[in-house]
Length: 402
Length: 97
Image 1: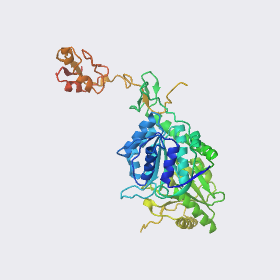
Image 2: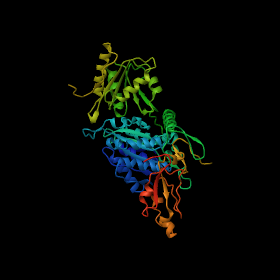
Image 3: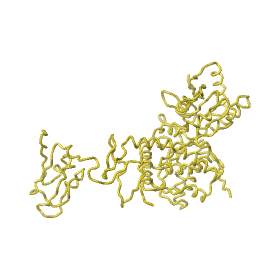
Image 4: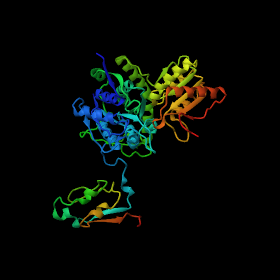
């Protein structure tokens, strides 16, 4: 029988972690992630989830605990937001460099200064180059489903996965979700096998100092140097796209829900204007596309689900017929433009898709952005592009720019 | 199924000399006067502060103690810590103060 529950995004994530039978949880509360880790600690306290909840004094330590647990073969989970994620930054590199399949829920929140507890995606985007897979969710169903897929992906390619979803907009909004059956999730997730033997019987020194060149170990075997290990991580990220798509397809077969692999498209078949975004704003863009179509503008949406590895091929296929591309995003790479826009344009550079791309920065620090405003922005964009401007200036929506 | 490492992250086994013979980094050599050394005089496993403090683990907790000069980098911590002043740091040949 289908188990439908009405839950917040944070509760969906906690239920997801429980269904994955995580063995070690370590997290430090921070708005808006707090109710996720509270819920999970209650599951453990009440005996619903047999796991070790390690209480720590900081996010840096929380991820350090997960790194240790994952190294010895435990399925480890953590979650954070904003400054907590920034405080984890060093350990994010260590987790990825150690090739540990940790899953982290990033409940997206703006970054200070000045203080903000509200939603944007600057926190996760700022961790783009740490070697983690990043997947963005558009609703609470996708949060629980993506979390389950995340362990399958991470443990297949030995790369940690960050499951990102918008603070408050999703984390504190109740929606009906279908909770997968525990047994079915068990079948979907084979047991985790660590890649390096680590036991008192066979001692290993993990992550020793590596010198610039390759080195011979104590048995005379030529071992990777720093650059070879970096190349292996890069290759793993590139190749992980296949595992991400496979996990999505397998999940769709097993549970009947397909969230689109690397990205998803909405009314793109004949679309001339493509609205692209990540997370909950991409959902709003679908409403905007409907309104635009009612007004006679052929609009569609490409929702980027996976930001790293960047879905270069999928983006090229999805935007093949677009005559104008609008990129709406809740982050800014200071001194340039939105990070998604930069990557998207780079993906199109060597193709025949030579259409104007208009970047919109929206919703920073929780500023509301409504579908109607995405519609107005799109109409403005089309006017600018129709006037012959091929490179419209990055526009900040709902922002008093004087 | 035999267990094996996937070799996707950096790893080594505890072994002497993973980074080569580091003794040639040394400017000063520790030399021990066993007649001042507490375990040697008392013929008992005592003190061994040099063994405890040596950051490279090249001193043995034996009677008499011994220092592996293939790997001793000559930091002088053993000489500094020795309560009996049994260890002196002397210049390596060709190295001046």
